[in-house]
Image 1 (tube, rainbow over the protein chains, first blue to last red):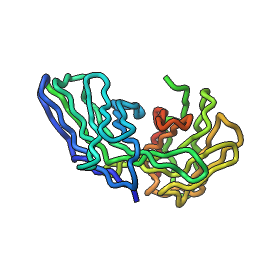
Image 2: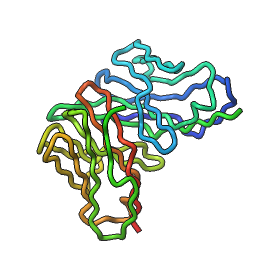
Image 3: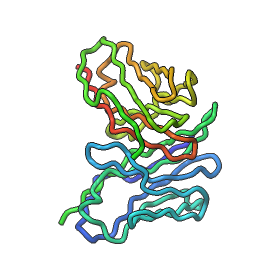
Image 4: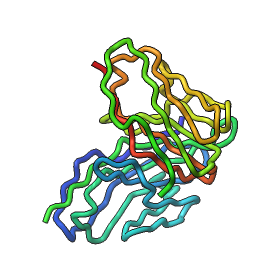
Length: 115
Length: 111
């Protein structure tokens, strides 16, 4: 079945450092891909998405490119801030029988940014 | 923010007791989901609904049941709670576009 693998954390960076969180997927076809972020004590919220190969999703300085050749969707940011400290989840979209869709999530990567 | 309310937000119960978690939405979205979040597992789908009285199982449905009698409410029931069901439960809604909107979570502890 479809699955998502992302790098384990925690990842600890200094403010203004470059961030990469790796995500690879296994899927039939070319599903839409997402990055969600979870701040402490909150639910998940969509950070960015890409719906087809070579698409680049971007939001709040974060970017990820849908690479079908390497089945990857790595999250990057050029200069992280303390406020980016959170757990980041990579996910892919599955179509469900009966309609609708569901997200299959990776295990999450905790990011800690220090001054 | 998407209008999703989960209740209760925190609950402590004992093994063998029934527990019901409620998810209420004000967005009139067709699709609703219950996920559980556990360390090392990410989020795993328990059950989902694609309309009133239309529900189906997710990947970790054993020990859980759901009901959806109105568009806005999706209930998750643990008929006889076990310690393995200690978790954080998230409700999510979708209009079918691929993006899911999540509630703030319900933390359940089964002693």
